Amino acid sequence: MSDPYSDRGNKDVSIANPKGMGSAQPIQKSGAVEPAAGGPFLIGENMTGGYGKGPDILHDCTISVDEGEIAVIVGPNGAGKSTGMKAVFGMLDLREGRVKLDSEDITALSPQDRVAKGMGFVPQTSNIFTSMTVEENLEMGAFIRRDDFRDTMTQVYDLFPILKEKRFQAAGELSGGQRQQVAVGRALMTRPKVLMLDEPTAGVSPIVMDELFDRIIEVARTGIPILMVEQNARQALEIADKGYVLVQGRNAYTGSGKELLADPEVRKSFLGG
Image 1: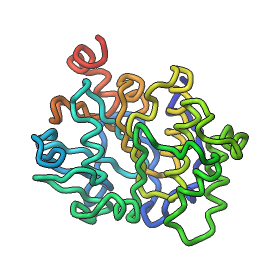
Image 2 (image 1 turned 120 degrees about the vertical axis):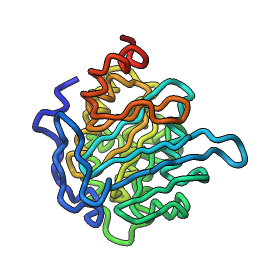
Image 3 (image 1 turned 30 degrees about the vertical axis):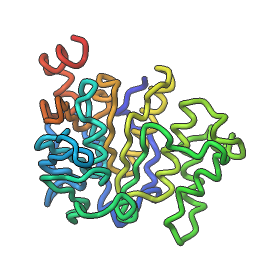
Image 4 (image 1 turned 180 degrees about the vertical axis):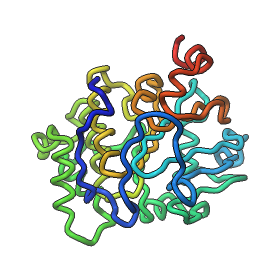
């Protein structure tokens, strides 16, 4: 994969929601992650909870991301990674803790209301309308907008050129990697304040994974914070400004991507040595 910190990427911040932007921050290259003034832009803080009346899966778990950052959640299977993401998005009830977006407490809001507040969420599976064309999928992403979204669609096509080429093709006919591009593009059509990705490279080849990570970096360079769950831990931490290692629903390790990659315990336990 090309150097994720090279000077490239779409720096047109208009693809993001300007009300969620503030001043776009460059991706931090190394060292400790500095929190934004007044706290992180998005934080799920001290979250404890599970699904319905079942047992707790998350235990005092905290996950956050700041503007212009890529924050990655990694850990073993069953560690609660996707559950943590879904908790931030409002897909399970928290018994303790809270979620704040741009300093606003949104803990009580439904997922639909969180989308209206500026959260873009791409689930791991069932994340496109397979019978619709690529362009129709992108148009569906703009369902909450009342303005002209054609400029945003152009920007999505600039980010994912293959989607423009296949815009009149049924999304279900695309490869796995192209489907993921459609899913991310549809989320970007909402002009989100923050983009959340659950296992975006699941089931794709290493070459496609590298390409998707490159596009994720480009999105972050527009200023949109990205919170991502990823099974390919080493590759994800290589592009991450901030990393969270979860074990049994708890924060086991937290630091910059480089710090976690350099930590011998993290390497031994989660990265294969």
